[in-house]
Length: 156
Image 1 (tube, one colour):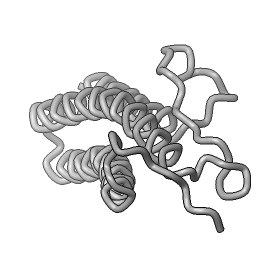
Image 2 (cartoon, helix red, strand yellow; image 1 turned 180 degrees about the vertical axis):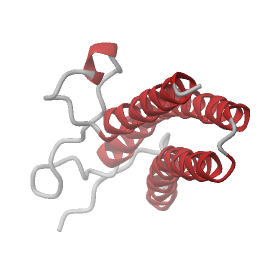
Image 3 (tube, helix red, strand yellow; image 1 turned 180 degrees about the horizontal axis):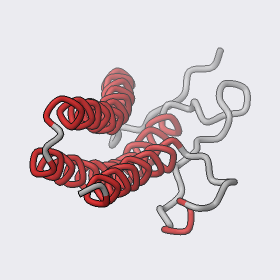
């Protein structure tokens, strides 16, 4: 196999390999953080429903509901921020792979950079990026809590 030539103004091949590994770790860490926000939301929903069933107190339910709504909004914003980070990460990965001669049909398919976020992607069933899926789940959590609290107030 022919060794790819890196010019003297570029970092060494070893440095590029290390940076590539860091970029991929950053990608996986970013994705894990996005999923973690959903896990915390689901845990709080379970706590809210449990507390509601145990105490049957509209104020406790409302406070926990507001907490879940705040967390859901925060998770939504975190996911949007991570989307921008992912675009940067994949641009860096593609640049490093190109410098290493890996973006070659003999080795790898052409690199892919996630598309820029568009609000209508959320309702577009053909859009299946993982961050869109996570955003849809944050919206579902938000709608569930709103409906749950409205239903709870309706029983007063």
